[in-house]
Image (cartoon, rainbow, N blue to C red):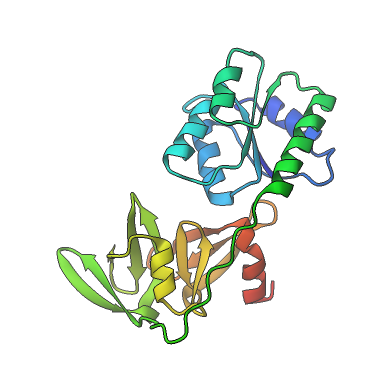
Length: 249
């Protein structure tokens, strides 16, 4: 069970981490000291569960859940923790799986962990991408809209693609811009699956344009691409095995 702990008080983070480390199947992959950092880490690392303080500067725990919901990010199992109980109704309205009062009791925390274990065990397995149909066309060119022009780019020159505000954008060797594809999945299905890899739900990368593999947090990685900005892209935890296989890590 991969977990992120978010609390603006260092002692609270350390106490929560200490308690969670008593559970052998729990791995704390990151901590955050504010809601904005927590939302960013959740999107990048895709943890199974997040233990969130309700009251944090910038963006509180409830705000973190709302922000990720609005972005249509697949949500982890949220557990909200606070010294006050007046937020409980709103927490469950936002589908938090539990609500813990501080100071957290070890026995009560064990009940929460068991509940998350059951949810994980019952979670439907994400289906593998459908195999390419016989005779389907692998596109070798992609049209990129940039500076009012429709530029035809060789697929081998694509470095990575991402989605921003519902627009699929690509970064290639000599151009950046938008495509006419509606989703990352649609673009991925049109390209060579041996060359283009979905490293993260928001990124499709050209395996041949990866410059560096960077260890990041516990048991996770980023990849640095060879574009001009040397963009660092997170590798989702579910894709870590593929990364290790690709580069014999």
